[in-house]
Image (spheres, chains in turn brown, red):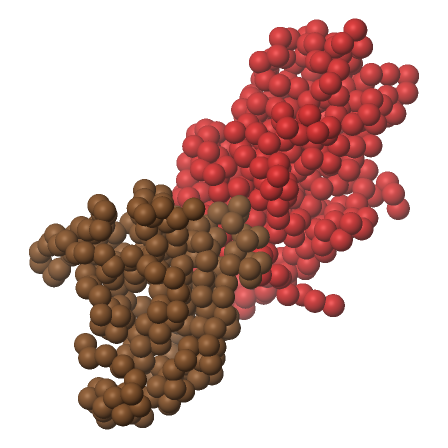
Length: 251
Length: 374
């Protein structure tokens, strides 16, 4: 039974190439991605751990979301084996090639389809792109407050208190839920997966798979197809959204 | 034909590799030096399901298949062979036979705490005059009313002093030799059951190996595991499974020897270039890698046969025999590649060689029993 004090948390994660294993092609100076193992982005594991700790304290549930090729399901299985309750895999050719803005927009549309949440936790940034943009952009699209670079989280009723690690200073802020936080690798030590969770994590029953058609968003606002617009400038994306009567929000 | 691991198996390998490399590998050298039993680590592993890998969930286990079991044991052994052996013995020759042969009451009382890791398990068959030839066992169990009275001495018992629950083989009818042996579930603390000499071993030093002494030890009749007189038959079934686990331990040590050899031969420079550039070293590494791959197929095939419910005794014996000899050869080559440094305790390969030799000798009796079927 859902209690009022329960905390429903969404964690967004990304499957990335293990940069320890990436080699450079001496001829082209580009990354050799073939045969490079994929891992869950390290700070996203910190995000999962932060969610697990909050759930242990306050009850509630954890939903993991990732967008990627079908094998990104492995990343979800890992988060489920750590103890998350359920997961959503967004996989479709139409999503391919999305930059951070389009990714955040797509994630925001998924989150609107899910049950009400109080908190979204993201890793600070992914080791393959290092942009640290998706979390803040997602908060923008959902029109909720955001706290970035968190190294400590505590929740009391509808208030979340977070310590933020800035370049040369620490800052403590309070934010009213629902909100989005991004966490750094310093916030915790992600727990090990448990063998007890493996069967459930791999059974597929905890994972919902959605394609572009499930999201009720015009295809040309997803993936690479929207980038032809995006690279002209964010203004055009908004203008185009307005034209379509869609609510592509300003950040 | 399919050589691909399932999602579950891959995740089990990933999980145990992460855990073993983070938590066990950094402590392996210390464990070897101090012979200190890794009690704290086992507590943590219990919470993660390592103590009931193939035991069904309703009895407190993780419910995984035998192939996953071999992957997990291999990854543990790759980091710390002592940890792997404690876990393998507990799972395969203590928890598993209770799952296989135990009454519902025995499962509730013993299997659940074993699978949850609240209790540690051991298995006692070997005696000073009956190791590879278990039918000439001298430990006796005499029925007196509602108890069997056990007398005798077991030796070389893995986790002997640390275990809470031991499966003990004793002769209930010496005239019938192999057909007169019965298994008992014996709890630590029972009057007349004591731990004797703790061995100081060549390798696998973090796992304690002890003598167990039974002096008029009264074991309740309800603690007979399986049917009286069928102890040896059940022991052979159990050891068949155990042997797959020993093969997996051997694989782990062999893989660790290969890992260290590759790392060292890339780092170490002689005559102005890394060792890895010399063909003599490349040949050794190629042989190691090839043999390990072959051993892994044997181990996985035996585990797969068991998961299919098909006979696997011969295949399990082959897997154990070959994998443990591969581990020995790989460890020898690894020491060779490291040269003088390979003889020093500061280098892991010195430990691998000692661990590999113990694994090669362990479960020897089972090899005879397995191959006796040819």
